[in-house]
Length: 291
Image (cartoon, rainbow, N blue to C red; front, side, top):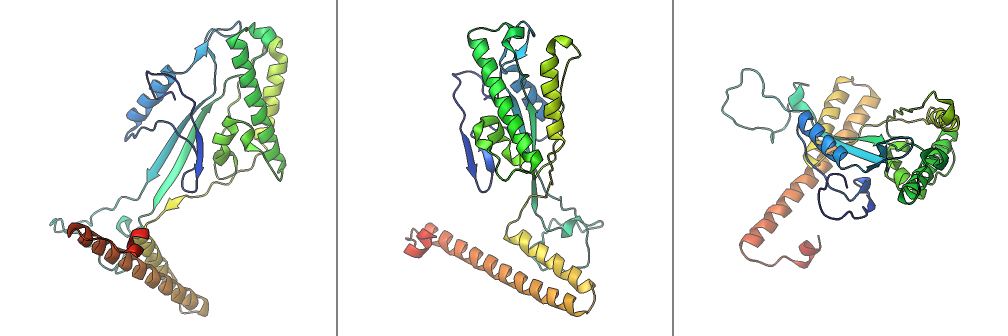
């Protein structure tokens, strides 16, 4: 973990769940500005493992992944000319008179940016590496070969692509699977001495161009945001005219909004009742405890 200073280096665990997808159980830092973000990036770069070979005095001895998770929401603005009393009537029913920032559904959009720096492929006859340097080069070449096979399978539309053959491809599975936008920069040298390495790099780049991706918006909504969204869709359906299709869509949205509002009200009542029991020192019923 390049964001951890001091202490021994431990093997990081790759995990997966329905909400976060594939992720690494590593250190995370919250940043609120571009300056903070660059500071974390440079701090991790200082801890990166490098070594000297016959080809490069500062050769990267591992791949590096810098993952940035961005959470955004439309900021609600106060209407111009307000009374400034600080009152909040967001709990009231939307009158449907505006489509400004204050009437957005409040969904949180989540995006992930993976900055991946791959260590270059190595040939022992060029690097002259021995011992640990030779083993590191072998691991690097093995993971690059696995990545090339995954890219080739994705480009050809294979029915099954094994991302689990390498930790690198396993971590990048969400980005390579299609729900992403991908940009690849391949570095080569004009030297004839490394002709085979250049050829394999260009072949890898050719395979990357065949991978098809389709980025989609990822949103997380709570009950209140869901109700706002359904109300907005209902207003849009009403503006569409009195035709039969619009009327059916309007009735369906009304039913969805009512169900969501009832569920939200029930959840708030259950939460209030549980708080009262806890404050009074009571014991929760078995049904509530299991919930």
